[in-house]
Image (spheres, rainbow, N blue to C red):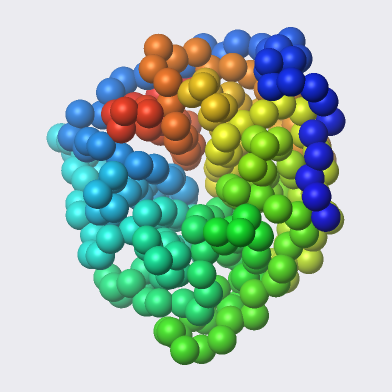
Length: 266
């Protein structure tokens, strides 16, 4: 199944139409000076992990006086934390789960992985093919060599993220799509959502944030259990072009295109 935009025409036309559908949301951002050159960041259930441009992974240890970023083992190109634990992929697209302070390799190859769903894992490979690993298999991982029951998801997406009300993704054309997905990887199929984003993240509370091709941040308004797709996008004005965002416990983490990290609050 191919994913199509609802709004057709040139990119400029789509971006203009998107801007007419959004409001502006006021946030205050502060530079995080004790971590540099990040590639991406992920937050969930009170935890924050990140990978820098040298593929060094970190987790945030909170302190009474100041927070400290602690280097983790290995090298990763994408790392995620959530109800399913901490997972990563390395430069070979190898997949790993963090367990007892070591990385345990899992069967499968992905370029991006997300642990934000209801204890299940989703990800997409280098061909933009999305997959789901049901919660019992994700929790019962025992190491490399044990085949995992990956479920093929429909469509073609380059980035996918899940939360309590469903999963959001973007495809190679930056079109946005949504599906419901349960712990057994049963899904509703993709529905088109207006707008264009280059990456998108779903928080543990169901909040959705994303970044477009020029580095603008947006959040989805009106998301509830009864209305999981929300109602409209709100623009979060920042002075720096961003490339990656994540949200947890009222704090928005944003990484600029130059690798500078910010924490933002309403």
